[in-house]
Every structure is written in structure tokens, then in C-alpha cells.
Length: 112
DNA sequence: GTTGTGACGGGTC
DNA sequence: CGACCCGCCACAA
Image 1 (tube, chains in turn orange, purple, brown):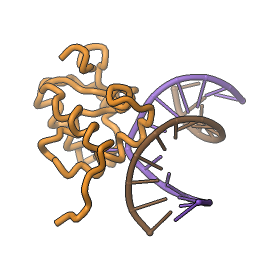
Image 2 (cartoon, rainbow, N blue to C red):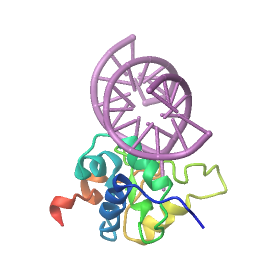
Image 3 (cartoon, rainbow, N blue to C red):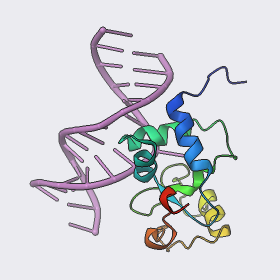
Image 4 (cartoon, chains in turn brown, orange, red):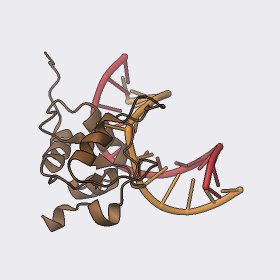
């Protein structure tokens, strides 16, 4: 199994993402800001390494544009975005382009 | 210790 | 509108 131990930074990301409620989504920049950093990319990197899946709902973390991001973004034609389906299952509305209305589903820890 | 890259964001051309 | 660039922090080689 993985001999790699998650760093404190990654733990902050997981801890925040883990408490995202169902039917809501947070943006990378939002998470980065919430844990006290500006590295939106580092947040994505931590989620890519997400050893706590599916406990940590990485699919609930989307881009600031409302796009699902790159965790499954190679859905060309016949292969639908798996994470998108999960989000739809959780009650998140997604446009035909795969965009999410952050003004409605965008979640912030401050509201928790 | 240095270099490059990354599941990003925002600004500019 | 889309394409391009820069900057951000963290991590792997």
C-alpha cells in the first residue's frame, strides 16, 4: 500500500473537502483560501493524491468557472463524466456544457 | 539545493 | 468569445 504519508497541508485540504455537504460544491480557490493559502493548484494536487477517497468527496470540488475540473474531464462523446453524474445524483444542477451554478450550489465553510 | 510541473485563477491580448 | 501569460504554493525527481 502507499508508504507515502499525507502532509499537513494535504490534511487541511481533505479535512475541509470532507465536510462539504451533499448537494453543494466548493471551488479550488475557495478551499485554498479556507485553509489559509493561495495555492489553488496545490489544492488540486492534494486531491489528485486523495488517499481518503471516497471519504473525501473530491468530486464536490470544482473550478471557479463552474466547470467540474480535470478529475474526469476527458469525456468525449460517448463517455460521460462520471463525477458529473454523481453531482447530479446529489442534487447539483449542471448545464449542458457541464457547468455548475456556483451562485446556488457554491458552498463555503462560513455557512456551515 | 535546484528545476519543473500541476485536478487553478485572474488578467490581458 | 477564445487563446495566452503570469503568478500562486506545494511536491516529486
